[in-house]
Length: 373
View 1 (tube, rainbow, N blue to C red):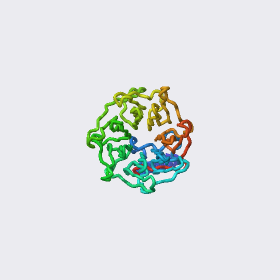
View 2 (view 1 turned 30 degrees about the vertical axis):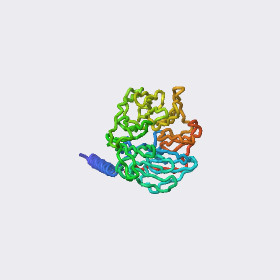
View 3 (view 1 turned 180 degrees about the horizontal axis):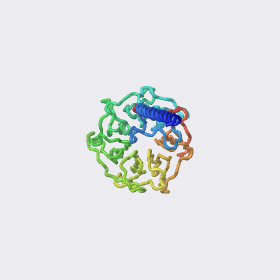
View 4 (view 1 turned 90 degrees about the horizontal axis):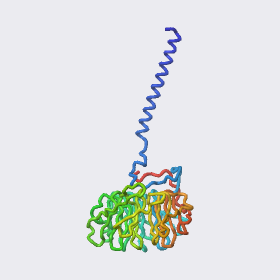
């Protein structure tokens, strides 16, 4: 072998050594990164944890108004907005300005709100149970005894009683005992996103995965929940749906059910039979239902729509809405309409014809932490 070949061989050996060293360093770097990379928020249960920002946001992590999961309005017109991660906001001027109201609220991940006129606002949270606030107060009181280790997804206030739909069925607040008591048997490990009361005393529970259940209030609290065995078939895909997000009842005792991804259904005979109202509705993900006489307004994953009974068709009501992933819908006794979205809130002064962004005052939510961080 001549001198040139010998030098070439040495150079090739050095190159192999450098390549091998680079490969080892790359492997070590990947292992270290894999071990230290933080857990993604997406690992949390998607059925219970709401999306902080909907698909209508191209850059959701650049900072935006918080996701407003619940909105309630008192008879005096005071608006309360519950956010997912930034606690509660209150407005006395229809959302023109907001004040943060989180003193005593240890869990800022709010899922639902309710008002008992003249008394309290109730807040249901992801992991902290239930809190209540006097309408003239500034500090929340925790009333979570009996609701340990479960999220609170819905409220119903009926004749001075407070019911909560939770991840472990339905509970009722007993003021004398200062604790929540289980209502009925049979929904122990079932999430209840919606509650409604019929005029005959039947309490309806919309469940996540178990369809519609009911119980007769006035009987013993430990009576059995009854599965309605109602069939909710999507007219488009012809698939049955048992994941129900919301239930509402109008003055004629027509029942409306909003499903997770199968649209909206109505019963005009107190739950004996059902038919779909979803034909020509652009989105099947129903997040809110408010009946107005024979009409019904729904909040969906792609905006707000109103079913006109006389015309038998849906009307889109999204002018001014820059966020279409609606999370909550409230129509106040004053006639104002409010929606909470994946980023901020909006108000309509003309029954949904036009919307105005009222998110100023919420602040900016940067990269949000998950509820278990």
